[in-house]
Image (cartoon, rainbow, N blue to C red; front, side, top):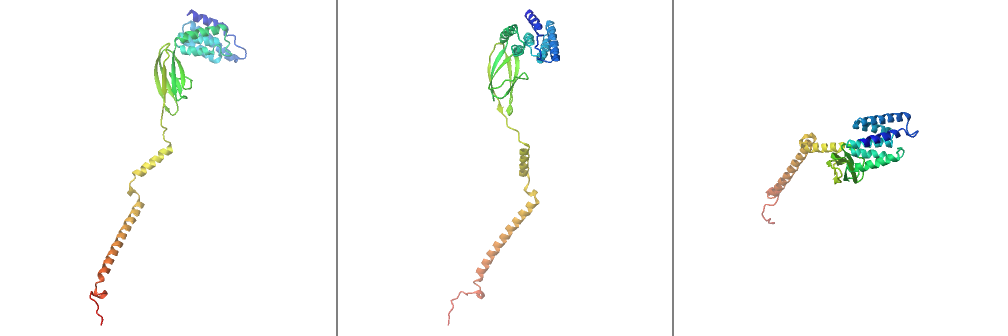
Length: 262
């Protein structure tokens, strides 16, 4: 507690040194009010509320002193990963960091490193997005270094055209596990035009042949035509038989006797 209060008191004295023109006067006023509220809340032991006040102040004016205070209260809340991210502002250009701020930040980084779990995640496809406990991680590429607070976490890997994958992780401080996530492609749904075409083909296949009256007429003409052809064929046979039998008729040709000319 003494270290935290001392650090808060230290950065409280340096907050007023905001470079002229770095923000609008109204923004500076709001950032200062939030910063001072964070100091009061932290001294009262209301760490979660203090963290929100410091975070709001940091979003208005990105000061190293505010980022350091935010990291300190987050570390006390057990939110070491967020604390580590907050320290990125310390030393950034335009943050107004002092040598003491930088030294405190490095010392706190060393402490936070031992409180976190680091997961090396291989992701396929490489462009997939990673979410940790519902929040976008922002990392990219085939290999991701995921830093997590100890405890249970839900990692979700998503990419368009692939089935999402969720991992339930129980992170252990100081552990450095590895995992591989390969997403499975999913088939694209058919378009409206393709669905309509399939429906039409299905209806045509299921429709009875007798449903079309024109088809009745066509099939009847074919049937009658077949009968006519059969009748003609029978008539031809009868005619041939008649002609052949008529050849033995005395009135129609030879009588079967040899003609004896005289």
